[in-house]
Image (cartoon, rainbow, N blue to C red; front, side, top):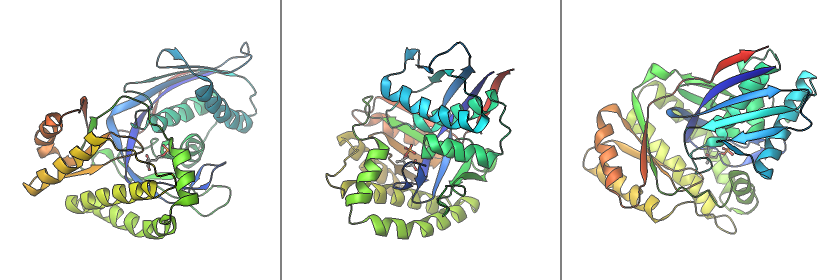
Length: 328
Ligand code: PMV
């Protein structure tokens, strides 16, 4: 009973921040993302009766206690669903730095969901898989699909209507998402902790929840109409709004470093010179720039010219997650 899957990471253009239910990991708002071509996780899951506990190998090292607990708790959901009580060995490799704000949990849990469900021979629909992946990480529910993807917050208490589905396929539009790595250090405040704090303490939380449906609607339309300026403006707006929520929490959460802010200014300057480039930043200091294919080189050169950017990664729209190997 073993299978191997690959899932690509994704970056939210309309961000999710805040949970409706922490235990079931149901987001308080919907989100829209693009799947990334250059960043992925490959995960192999082997259920084995000889194992007395789950084993995790992450990027060629043994998983630490926190990581192992999170994986075991997630596998428990699948064990319960399948009625197969066996422990598993999980071997996972990222082709990018883990926990540096590059959404390794998104691709990681999407790959794990697909591989584990296949190994256990669970015959699940895409929606069911997405709901399962969400239990591991909210953004993972989106990483099962390629292209542009929307995640629904839903209203059901059990989370049965909180899943992701594609808006437009990988070949819909030749856009680029460039990532500038400003630091390889893991983030200080994890997304779950940050979201809980914002919900409890930010005076802007209600406004965030109330204004999200309009952003989602406009983004959906702009993507389908290929209105790049609109997509870019909404992307920057959602990013700054999410960080305003983090910043206005108590104590305030500041994910940016000085290089992140330098890059934001540089991107806006480039825009004033006529290049359509827009930034977004997640729960970490890395800078991400959305642009059209024809501007990729200009944007990459600009990022490389910023002092402190250690590496740039260029993405196109990425594909859906897929099974690589399956062995009964
Ligand atoms: O689901 P998580 O824990 O990966 O949280 C995602 C949070 C953001 O990346 C900041 C926003 C998003 O929608 O991906």
